[in-house]
Amino acid sequence: MDYHSRVKEEFGRQAETLSVAQAFTDSWVLEQIYGAIKPTKMMDLLDLGCGPGIVTASLAPDVQEVVAYDLTPEMLDKARQRCEKAGLKNVRFKLGSAEELPFKNKSFDCVVTRLTVHHFPDPRRVMEEVVRVTRRKGKVVVADVVSSEDEEEAALHNALETLRDPTHVQMLSTSGLLELLKESGLKITSKVTWEMKRDYDEWIRITNAPDRVKPLYTIMVALATRGIQAGINLRFDGKTVVFNHRWLLVTAEK
Image (cartoon, rainbow, N blue to C red):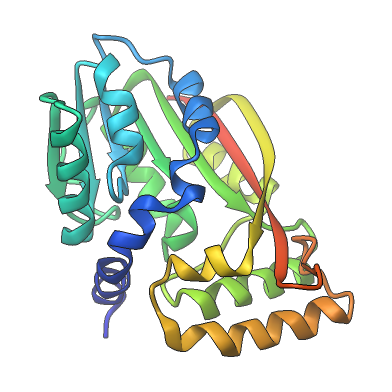
């Protein structure tokens, strides 16, 4: 199975659980993204890897138009349902891959993408496309979970994420994500970091893949009880495995 087919299969199955997951609907995170973008009624915006349209629906009331763009038909269906329920009339829905955006040069005043970079086999190619479709002086806003700056910790963290979801490629470190944007020719104007506590049950539930629950839990309990934290403060609280995801929200200008 090629990579895009695997993504469609994985996220087609996750569409329902992801659309209601607290980690994705968290209002505080949406407020951080909104504050970074500072939307206006003159703004044309691309939500790259929009998933079930959570970010799209939060921004659409205050911009001219949003294009909700995703590779997975089931995710776009969820996004369409969410926007229709909210009475939003200024959202277009487009299916396609991040590596080849079907938009003309300088089409958007802002491109936003949340929790997508770690799924891209070639993030540099994707960022080249993002920059291409962004207008001069336009914004690029990227929010993703980052890994440790320690290579061994980062490797273990990413291995756990891949066992949970085989479409996971690599969570970059903070310095790695910043370098990716700079190498794409973007000027970083601000960055914000925070930590989100996760517990195993809600984290694994999103995948909607019951066969993965017990084996991965066994591995993570074994690591946690031996004090191996994988750069995410992995620990066993007596009831379940818990850990912290560190987020980085970067605002950049073309």
